[in-house]
Length: 226
Image 1 (cartoon, rainbow, N blue to C red):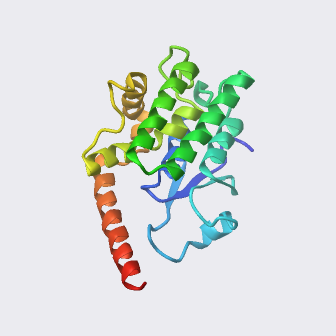
Image 2: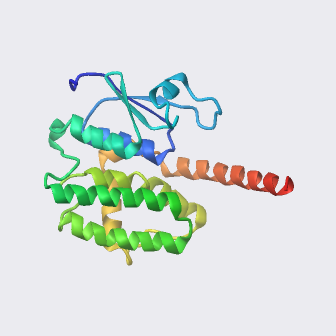
Image 3: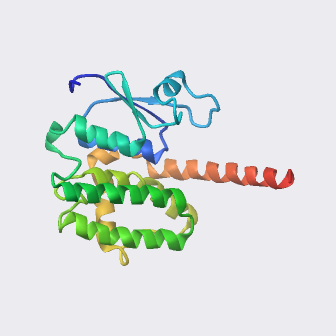
């Protein structure tokens, strides 16, 4: 496929996994069209159903009419399809370092999917603090000199992490406990490629409040029907 072919991202604005894809494309300096699915509607668009008939969910990346699904798979695809664009490599050239980055990316998503207790979140961040020290090798990013695969994989969740801190009035990413990770997060969120993709914190907080109301009402209705 040629780099000049049309690029599209199908997704919803609050999804960290959609944000992940947008950041990866921004880091590469690639121009794309964002096609927004309407959040909360029971009926999915025809394009989504056609592009991701297996899971029927976002994000979907469309390159020259060919769809790719699942955010980590998409970021990997971007790394492979546009290896020399903008002088940035999303994955280390060393096979072992590349494998380690992929391992920790899966770890991040596993934690996001399964962990709910604050202690477990703190424990996960402590593990990632150690991972950052080993992967970054004294450089600014997990990927070293530039934002890469693992930076994008974890960094896409920072907006919601900060929103959760505000909603719950607690500190999750602590500068004293996780100094390297804290500094990395501040730098990541300040990067232009990230700022273009990351929703404003207040917007995520307000959306989070609506979700809490929705979930609370659903829980009440469920208890009344039992």
